[in-house]
Image (tube, rainbow, N blue to C red; front, side, top):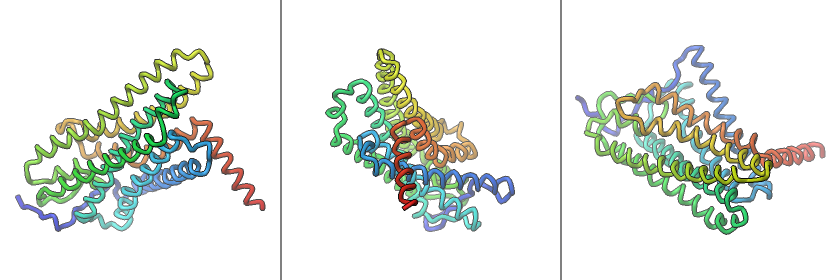
Length: 312
């Protein structure tokens, strides 16, 4: 078997072929990606401009929107350029950067969603102690911790993945560089790396996911004991939007990273990857804005200010 050195480029086979049906799907993906960028940018703008949204909950939400914008910017421009130009090569350095940013953002989002669930737990179960239990200092520490843990995992996986020698077949059956897909091309024994990567996935996915389940179990117990129907309705509306985001994100991530090797399929991986790298970032601002009266109020206020400036 020929060893292919890491100075040569990888070839991304991509997601679409040059057919009318795939051109239509490609246009849809670009539209969704652009809408996601605009939706998340709008969410960040509203949270920054409206003083009523200057709370730890919305600060964490703005970080989620920032991560989603960066995730789309990491994946979609390269995918679109490859499809339109027909040049599907990517350098090892470019591949390493994609792996680093992708793992960093996905890992950071895991811990950020856990932080958001803690914020909701304190708000629902201990509302009078919220300023103490969810202080701005703790919120900032959670945010920095989320980014740092994600970056550490991203750096480790990118460096380890590119340290392997690769075989003659240097085609990646994906539309971006993802560690599990790239490892399949390695000529060396990858058992130890895959085992360590699996342990990392347990830490990065299942530990935060377990904390989220515990938080929402306690929230549910508290909500069911509320006497006020209006309070129960508000708590359910807020928490159900959070759980929708959590379910979409963790479901897709666990499917990609924690399935046994014998059940993996490149085509299935590509479809699920599209879902949580392009579709889920669009759903986040939609879910949070449609189910949140404070965000809708901030949007109406912003539109009113824009209309007033336009008529001056």
